[in-house]
Image (cartoon, rainbow, N blue to C red; front, top):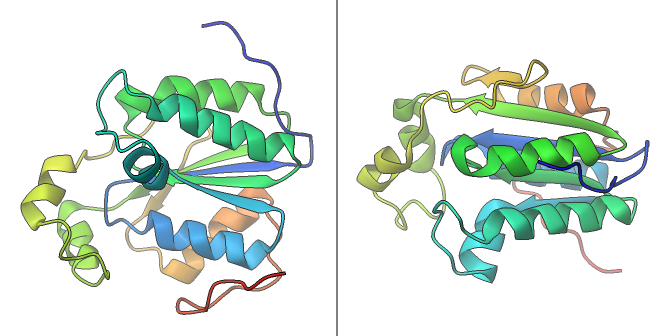
Length: 190
């Protein structure tokens, strides 16, 4: 695969948070973005794939290209980027590897290694718990679907939410102004 044009700057951070449905990716990513404040873009795989494209997660889909383009846009505009999603290795590794090579700043990849039993428990506490059944969750579950990069960071299910956020921010070099609370209201304009 040919190398893509460079993206971002030496100061930008690309943080990729991967894991199974219900592992805590979205909560962590949102809190990282809010904790940093302006200048940190949140790119959610589900939003781009399911809402914007209304596409199923299948090989050959458009989602990887749209995700890559969105991440590049944020980085090229000097924003840090937090990308979160299941991002199955067989469908997204090529795009993630290309972004990793092209990014001129620090790229950090994290995999939330959470068992099926724990993802089902966590899912039952989410507002969208009625949208997906335990059978749906089990059907999507891919155990230990890591990319295999030497610098991929594995976060065990025993890590608390606060410890995970602190670990990711520190490892990635993403400054946090404050650690927002779980139920903090979204930022208001301007």
